[in-house]
Amino acid sequence: MQPGLILLIIIGYFSVLMLISRWTSQQSGDQTYFDGDKKSPWYLVAFGMIGSGISAVSLVSIPGNVGNDHLYYFQFILGSILGYLFIALVLVPTFYHHRVVSLYSYLGDRFGTVTYKTGSLFFIVSQSFGAALRLLLSVKILQDAFLDPLGVPYPVSIVLILFLIWLYTHRSGVKTIVWTDTLQSLSLLLVLILSIRVIIQSLGFSLSQLSDVIAASPLFEWFDFSPRAGSNFFKQFISGFLITVALVGLDQSMMQKTLTIRDQHSARKNVLAFSFFIAFAQTLFLLLGILLYLFAEQKGITLTSQDGKFLDTDKLYPFLTMNYFGKIGVVAFFIGVIASTFASIDSCIAALTTSISYDFFGYEQRSHEEKKRIKRGVLLAVNAVMFLIIMAFWNNQGAIINTIFSIAGYTYGPLLGLFLAGLFTRIKLRSRWVPLVCFAAAVITYALNMASAHFFRFDFGFMNIAVNAMLTLLFLRLIRK
Image 1 (cartoon, helix red, strand yellow):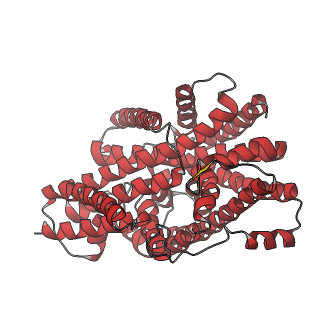
Image 2 (cartoon, one colour):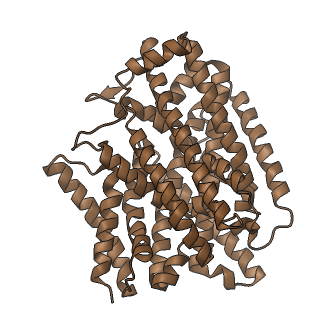
């Protein structure tokens, strides 16, 4: 595909984002960047959150990972639906009752300042890595297809994308993101439908024939009950529930948009509607994965493997798109990559800026001029950290979605434990010990997982977050007053 066509796609898409930014930036105040003036329609937020929930990682890693893990990710999706119910019925009313802007101020109300800042710090670390890894995958795709032929070094590419995101979000922040996410969600769903259509046409099957071929595929396995496998049903279902509660319900980037809705009743409807939107979209990505491997098999394409496992599965979808799916498939794919990149990363940057500004710089108590300086400085620092993390992980191989969930298990586990203790116990803590407890729980979880895998060949998988949260709760009881 000609780099010029990709450039036109980027320019056209970004121009629309800038128009939305200009419109939403009118009459913006000091709080607009952080809470959207509490005027977002719930249905718009629900649909727009699909774009944040489906990053380039979902677009590429979920279909690619089907080759090694079949459709077992569906078990995780089932658990996540239960997680969204918990968010809607428990967390949303709690956050509205406490009138939070930063979610972690709830921990301050419940346990004091030290616990509040500890929870916020764990979120900042986890979000920084998660957002940077999602952006890493997008940059790699654009680099291989577009920027390398132009001779643009990848460090420059990273800086350029971060700058483009800053351009349309730095004024009105989450108020702009609520509207741009709607465009990005629509683009992603159209991409998914177009990609499936192009593959079906390339294979030459009717819909009835295709369903029979998919059902006959050795990859068409939804559930795994092998007790030692990381993809075991109970591990995946429970971790789907816990990771959704932690990575959505306790995640500033996801909940910040929900909290821009005026009242908690509408916010609940937003979360429940979004849960079905995202579950449906992720299931389609799994079926797309079977189609991709089916296509490679039918065309005699040799995929790199080792010890019975496919390598670099994140490259499968981009490779087939660039070489076999024609211009329509390529255009659709790159619109999806660009949309998912902007949709997921802009929310993360706004969330990190919010959390740092409120939790560590006392944004609410500052004067107008001080608020402007804090926001500018924090935005610059967040972008710099993202750049450094991407550079450090540039040579990472394998499915990035597994890396993200693995890191989240160690960083969100203590956060989940703190919120569970706050919501479901009356415990009071010796706050000075909370940072040590959270750090110790993460380290011990890592050590237990390594020992279990080595001696018993039992991998915790995504269940790391459950072990971590339980250890945190146990240690919190040891430091109770």
